Length: 443
Image 1 (tube, rainbow, N blue to C red):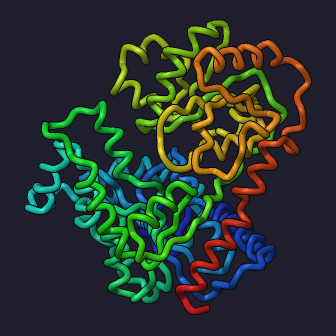
Image 2 (cartoon, one colour):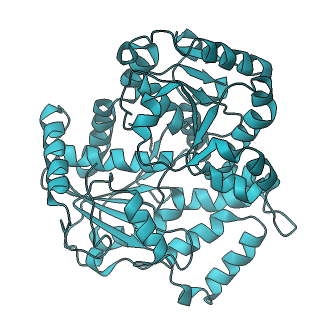
Image 3 (cartoon, rainbow, N blue to C red):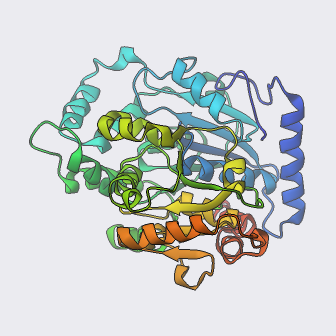
């Protein structure tokens, strides 16, 4: 991994306690650039703006963005914005985020969040009132609006291009556009109002519950400010083209960094970050699938355990031994897997964890919904077992468990690995971003 920065968020460019890691990142970017036939962005400065999230699929997209722009010769800045008041520069949340994201290799990294001292402001209090009714869109936009641009980032003399992620980070993007006149590309990361509505279905809110249309209006207002909207999957692109017909839209599949291909081992793993759609899928697996395959030991990896502790403590207690939490070496987990399980029952937009699983080359046992938004026919992949019903999923799991000690096929040449390389490889992603940036910069 590259790009660790001790003074993350306040440092001058390149400050690092481990120069060999920074140099390794620079050399990797140079190698990528030499291998690329895409337009050259040498001499340009690109600012990435994104939520301060880690241990999730979105973070892997941010990592790929930084790598792509650096490989094109650009100087890359990263501004991570916390989505909770009080998670400011130097806070515990900042330190946890910095420690968890050494793989985001940028020339300078910055961090900001809304100070608690700004909570009494009327605009935030109004947004907080809406949040009590389940309107996440309003409070996220206002939290970003009240997060200060770090002084070191304000001191930058030239920013040529801004790549923003998620609609609620747009207040920061527009503030920087006003300073530098730089065009803004916005990665939409699915229609977020749908995600909030799904979250509200089982979450606690003060009646009356926030309406989908109200949250969508806030989202669309921010999206409409961008010079171009980037969409990660087919369904998302179609939805936003209909909702914002006057905006420019580009379909850009994400380049999720591949996990290392291993020889396989005895483990059956589920990898899931802490979000509600993942929670529902793992609940389905634990309550409806696993009882039908009681002799199979499963490892549930990732910070999804947080969701279970909060939403289903009794269920978590019954299956606590299965939860590994966040681990440092995810490559090793995939390499040692007999099969990767994708019990996806809900969610919109492309699944980064599915792309990651494809890259491993391991056998997959999955619901069809895990492949949503992809131009892939999973039934045609020989190392994928598809199942919608719990009994069929359990039967596939039982068969895989019975044959776990059989000689493994070469995962580097498996159907899933080939599908990953064809659709989600880094070269295609870099070329797409280069094309968008060049068109906005007049190159």
